[in-house]
Amino acid sequence: MTSFDTSPQLTVWRALLALAVVFVMLATTGWTALRNQRGDTPLQASLSAWEDGRIAGRRLPDPQSGPAKLARFFGSLGERDRASLVRKYALAVGNMNGAPIELRYRANRVALAEARDVERERMHDKRLTPAGQHEAGRRMHRFEDLLEKGRHILAFDPEGSGRVAEVFGDLREAERVSVVVPGVDTDLLTFQRTHRPYSAPVGMAKALYAAEKRASPSTRTAVIAWADYTAPSGLGIDSATAMRAEDGAVRLGSLVRALPGTAPVSLFCHSYGSVVCGVAAHGLPDRVSDIAVAGSPGMRVEKAAQLRTGARVWAMRDADDWIQDVPYLELGGLGHGADPVSAGFGARVLSAAGAKGHAGYFEPGTASLFNFAEIGVGAYRSVHCAHEDGVCRTGSSGTAAA
Image (cartoon, rainbow, N blue to C red; front, side, top):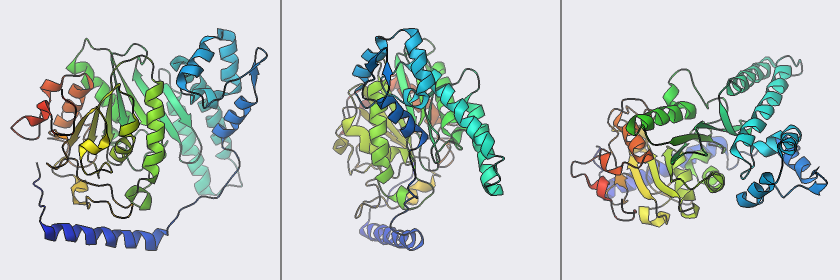
């Protein structure tokens, strides 16, 4: 485990470095990166149509209603009416917290097929540049991948760089649920990778699901690869602020509150995903039992106790992870606060042996993945701590007791 120099000279140096980085980012990207405003997105159009729709002569409920109200509405419908809603409002139903899980899977298959057909046409649209046609082809192939038999897509939005979430396991029957929250440069096209698969959300979730099965074969688990927020693109101004994390935190909270059953939920937050989890922590329901961060630039607080959560807070960082060189501070909204693996933060610090850098925490055979899996199944006494005293098993100040 890397030692941490807390000398005043280093603190000043990091502050100056942070200001220099900010200056460069502002000089090259400007204060804002607003996109051109366009008409309704496909998801917005589907939601608008839903708001004007009726079923069996009655108005449809507000799509922003709480999950319990929406669940009651869908529960009152027969299969024929449910199927009708999927056909008419696929994107709305597929992204509706409170809709039955299986119905969301079906709706997102319909929405993905429609999006695939749109991109297939765009591949041959002469009004697009060759680069635009190539991008359409990449998106079309990604949608085809997501349509493969046996995949369970919990959320899907094709707009812009896109958002998506996929489930491994049975959410309705799970005794433990894990959610993988990824970081920068996560979108539809990077949701899964052939090269270095465990650095992408699908590979991360698959690896964690398999590791949990090995850790406790008798425990029914489910893992969600959750890329259902607009992550920052690259190491620019968005990744240095909490703007994307604030929106992501709202969406993460909505996801957790809408999950079926009462099974404990563990969040595994990588890189900028740990900023999302930090911002979301205080508003998450009590069923969130664990928040584990890896390669974190900070959680927008100075101490774990300030997260205001009853969940256990875990942290790890590989000795070769470049993230350790970022300035761990927050200044005028820039930066993300204290280092979660530092002694003063108060998290339970885990071993990340074998991770080999910033993107390797979910690689099979690593201590980091082993630890995630043990947390995911609730085997807290089996985790490998970063320090020989084993204090991570008994907890640190500011975190819940095991």
